[in-house]
Length: 278
Image 1 (tube, rainbow, N blue to C red):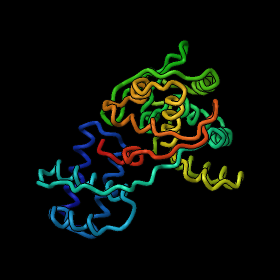
Image 2: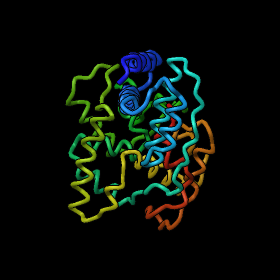
Image 3: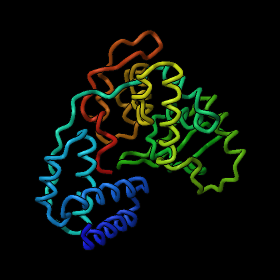
């Protein structure tokens, strides 16, 4: 790696930290930049554009590389026009209620709680990581969410069962009001990946391997729209600023009376929301 590039990567990450971007975002950006620096000169934006155009892999991954370099160019005052990465039109897998329930049941106390919070609220994993004790109103059973991805803050309601689990969890710890009460996204995803594999093998259901932590957010949104038919309520609950990001959840099929079975024809925004610039 060019020593100059190494110094500029550090400058990029420090700039992100000063701008209070998520630690997980900073970590991923550093990893992506160091990877690219092994193959190309990061101070040559034309070479970066060519590298991205020839790079093989999922469009979401290539877009994440472009996002990382966007930040490198920004913090090092390099003029670069970020290319549009053609995204796959294949919709993400939306889990069934049965599959969600199986994952929660296999999670153990701590991760059953985390997955139940995701299921009840549609919070992003990064918002779970940032959850502080002071966000919680245990009397009302609500979480006041300071949003991620430049969205809107919101107050979200927990179901009684989840609230009881949360009270037990907090009671077993010694948190201060400003403490984050859940693990970092990196840790949660590592544990969740093991859980998902175990549950998939136990139930002999390979589709469970397709369910990410972010899938719980999509599940929440599709269920909420199915029950209320209020796209504005879904928008508010998800913390979206743009209604276009919420309209993707209206493309549903094959609902039974009370249970979600499957969803299809999602727009590309759903499949790529997690990979956008934050």
